[in-house]
Length: 303
Image (cartoon, rainbow, N blue to C red):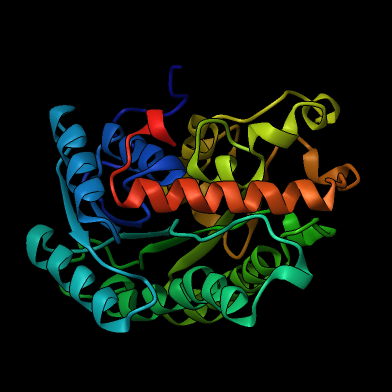
């Protein structure tokens, strides 16, 4: 699909994207690059990060990748410092790293609950905290007197309630709160804009294979408003808009701060659907087994 934005709308900007090597994060990385930005990808799996960087570079996009875990402050500091040393500045931080899986609350351990919050919520704050010195106005290497931009990838699960996703809903509620509070403080002190995007179900992403697997989703899709599933491109275009200084239909992006833009076709307006609990348990175990086998290199044909 053709972008509605000018090719050079992000020209000269440098973006760090956690979770930028797969799914929605990789599409954001790609579209940022196609619109003129240089990108640095951060992810836990070095092989996946290296592969994504190779694809971006083949498209002529200035890209580097660094393995790292957003839950570890030392990893966050190292990746940001490495990006700064490579590109000379950082203008944009996108927090797209996330953890999720389907599980009934009674079957979810406190450790499992904590793990998702550590990745989504604490990880988002940690990256923001370590990036501040690079993003604020007057930071060495910045070419403008204004601050940079932060974009946090959220969800809509916590706007009502979500079956079997209490951990993700709690984590994303915290992410939205971080977005608003940093927008207030850092917008005032440093001219840094902090916004979010709350995607709905996006086709062909790792999250969808865990949160809406084929085993139980066929009838549920029929009730979705507007259209069946969104595309990664939809989220990436929203991201390009929010981190740019664009003027679209007389609406100035650089004046948007503290907002989380819902991009879900109106799905969050409908009632949450109920999935059979036993089916969720079976699917949760099946997805966990597939993930574990994939991690140790078992061929898909044998999964």
